[in-house]
Length: 357
Image (cartoon, rainbow, N blue to C red; front, side, top):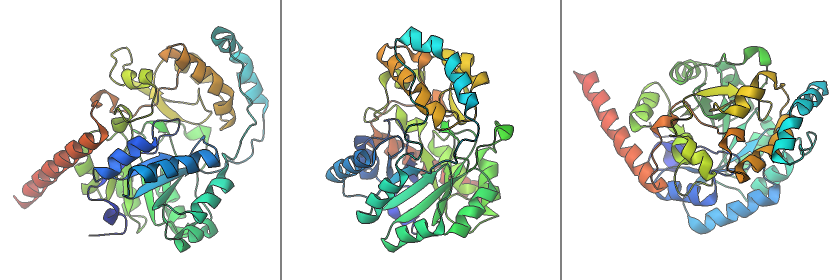
């Protein structure tokens, strides 16, 4: 059935907004031009930085695209755990010859300023991660013609998004690379997320909103499975991270298929929030001791991660990756969209044939 979501692009393929540089204008443009939905990640950028990327992207394509915002986080009640973690990272700071960052800088990620720009100069779609905006925010976006999507990791979060007036939900399974987009960060539930196919079904039976499925998807057959389970579109991040248009560091791209990195884990080591990345030295040594303190830990380790990248040391970087990372294909983004779409059509036809048999 046609919806305002699926009408945005010919293929049911969304390029995930990957904060930190991967989701740059060239990548989003290539995906949108090929018939998918490209995305910019506004997280960790200034409001002006986001605006400049939007302008650049508009110069590269006239096709629809989205922008992702990080929701402001609740104030941290006890900061002592951050101080303890900072002391533990002193050896890293000495090794990389760079100071630790200020954990209390830019705690709201410039949310209000970014939202003001998006209301003044609207884009096709805006998605939200780490929480659900108020009805006032979602209504304001609707008034300027912007389609809104809220990232959810449970049926309860999907229900909250529906009550708030979201147009759709991005259902994120535990297989997903990068940060888990939970609305509340509860350390007691670390690692207790739901697999994507089960989550799609639960959300489909809970809310009446279009669903974008995300989590470990790397092949067109998986897209077909997600849509058969009840999703309307599929969002892929790790699959696009290795494309030549991606702004990800070359060490990060190479690590996706490097046999040195054999598995992924959810960790708080780099940001203070659960995020799935390739297991490396930094994750092994510091993950067990990292506090639940986002974005404080992110700011604390930012300089260390940049210094590790500059030194060519992938063992000190945040190598975000989904569970399907070994299936990454180093194709131009437009070609990857075409390949995924062909795989999806073939798999969907096969499913249809089996169902008719």
